[in-house]
Length: 280
Length: 202
Image 1 (tube, rainbow over the protein chains, first blue to last red):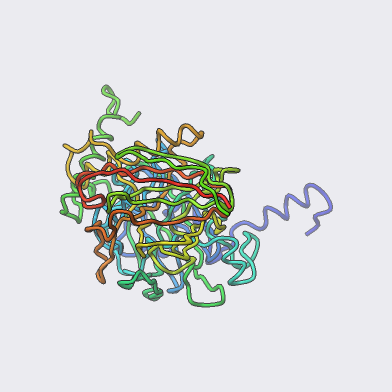
Image 2 (cartoon, rainbow over the protein chains, first blue to last red):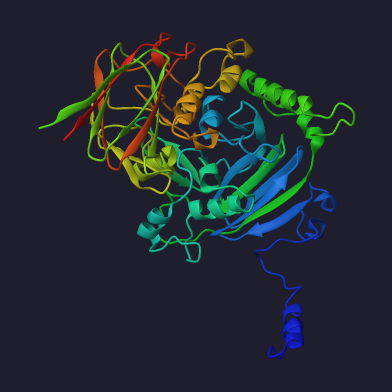
């Protein structure tokens, strides 16, 4: 096929569509061919696989359920959430561990904003291997560990990926603070020393229920304390679907969590248009 | 021969800030004992280069700050180094208290109590810093153990009157402090007290 002419180049370009890889979004999401049996396939609103060393981002509405799956047991998904309708409100990792009196993420754990509200709740977790302490990797650390950390290298640093994901929403590096990581666990000894407990193996999944409209920034890259001296981060699958009824059936009865939900519902209700009932 | 170029007492509940020049040493003195000193660091030349609790923890593979700890920015570069420490363990996972998080931790009756984030916002505004410039901070003299099952919390402090910590600036560093006003937990023995700041120049 010639690319020496405009029409030839156009035909060449158009002939490339329709390929399937193991690391891509499927649109519409309802065409996703591997929907788990507990999700109504026709309701999917996001279906994508993020390869190791890459990122994805989406605005997600209130009541969305997001499933993240560590396909090969070698993923490490860093996440930052910012409120979509007020992006100056964002994930606060310190409050996320301090308020629930718990550093290790699991079912029922909220991802709290700096305004005392729930951005998301972990509503299912078959992994239990997560980290709130270390955040994501840096260019200099990946350069020292793997020989490179640039976006275009084989071992991209998480901070570079977050910078890009944020930029797609008009946000700057200053908007990206601490993150949490799913699928690569870290545990602390009494003296504060940290050790990697690795992943939970292939197929481990975490489900998040979204309480307020959020910008979700997802980066899939090796954990800063990954003991492997080679970069071998595997793909993470992302599926999302509407589940608003679950906002009324939450898996946490702790008083701190209940007050966080109260704060969240209070802010959401106050912002509704009094005539239409829709969000401002 | 060093000489003191700054010597100030930060009143109980008050904010404080100063630029510490590269090579100079900031000493924070816990005058009455067990007073949490919430602290953020920024490169004075570019406040986009700011303290990262997570980069600092990851680089030393340890949660606690002590003598020898390099306090790092998000890009991993050094802002300050702890060169002397009479306590041996300071927190950087507990964050700052805020009016909003106080309502979760203690109830809505605490909403109008003083909180560190209010101090950070108002003092930071003097330097052109806003809400998005606030990140997880250091809590000097605060004790936050993590149990084997992940349970963590602010418990009784290990400090005592007159304890000191010394930080050497590796670059010109804006130090933003909230002398924690919290009265609902033991981070300052339920009684906020003054701390003293000195800066020595070589």
